[in-house]
Image (cartoon, rainbow, N blue to C red; front, side, top):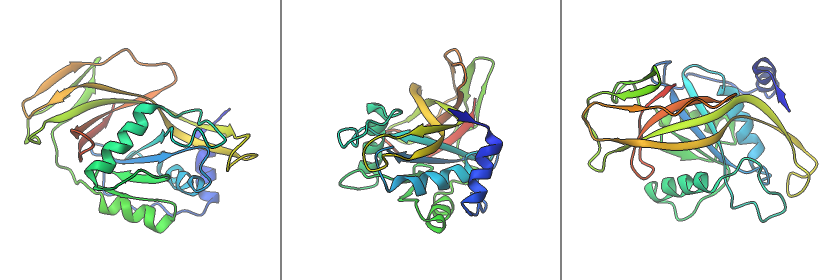
Length: 232
């Protein structure tokens, strides 16, 4: 079931969350990734915080479903092994011994639980990447990354496809059994397009997927900092 973005805003206001500046802007959106599972009873507050910023032009909010809760009573309907692998890349980069839910990661630079509104917005400030990074444009069926200093190992160019609608998920078993929880900006596909090594590069974009929005991330390899982001 989907509900409108207007209704999503109403949900956010009802939660009483505050949305201070994230440090990004429309051309340099702050990338906020939430790793969660529908079967995790600690995840709804962090998910609610993500909803408060999901419609903002200066924020690219992305919800990733992970798989390691799937054997504990409820299989997440959005989870994919590649999303769990992405969280593990972050764990290695951030010197964490394990992965956990919920985990909120901002620009690949700062992470925390993100369940408390003050902590969540503190992460947005702490992970601010400013207006640096290579120029990034996605138009005319292709993506172009401009010239700039690149990490030694290069940077991955990712295409992220996500559902911009609010999807109400009725959870029948597990820790959240009996609850219906709203999800928005749920990632449905993460596609590696190529590598950027500092010289300008232009790559073709796959045909758009119906009902999904998409964005491009330029990110240091193996879960490193996000250098540039743009909606496509």
